[in-house]
Length: 88
Image 1 (cartoon, rainbow, N blue to C red):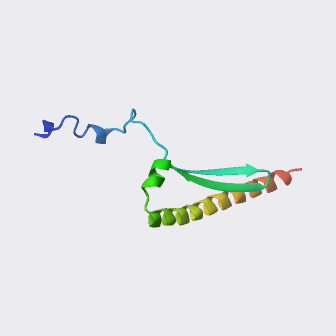
Image 2: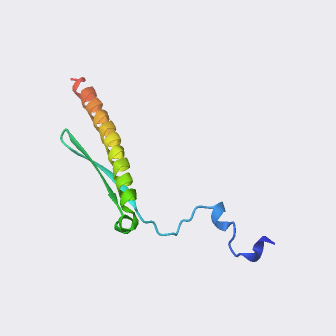
Image 3: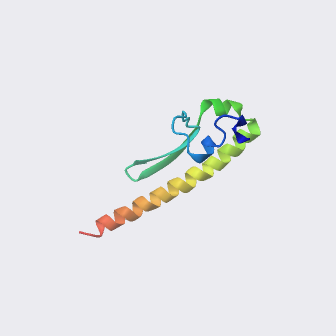
């Protein structure tokens, strides 16, 4: 029977709620006046495990991500400011 392995199927029926979470990758968008900057970071342990070609590929991809996200954020802020200034 399926009871040979305790807890089999239990984890698939619900999301784990007590498992520790580790942030391995993050993107931060910051605004200073009209200046918008986008940065990304990787967990140090994961960075150490990447091969040089994997690190290069990740850097290129995350450069594109931060450009897209930062550009979109900047566009939304510009539109919001135009809406506010037009209601004098």
